[in-house]
Length: 101
Image (cartoon, rainbow, N blue to C red; front, side, top):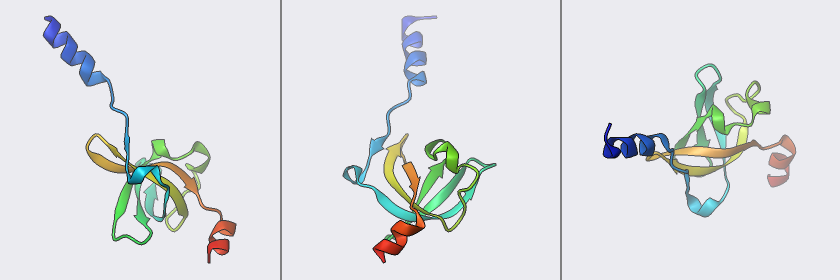
């Protein structure tokens, strides 16, 4: 195996870091749907006609079993491997929603 092929193999194994969008600000939205068995779902972003992909690896383990459509969440939007996705996902408690209203 040549050095050129070795360096290509090594480079392909290194995953790039996600690029944070919106200057790192947290966004809020509603879980449009989430299927634990499929390991992904989508979040409808508040005040935008846009949804963002969410992967189970970005959901805290304590929420894996309870996260459902309609839940309110806070998250950052990142660019990863050329696609946008939600990151640093947290549940917005009912108290926070009522206080904001």
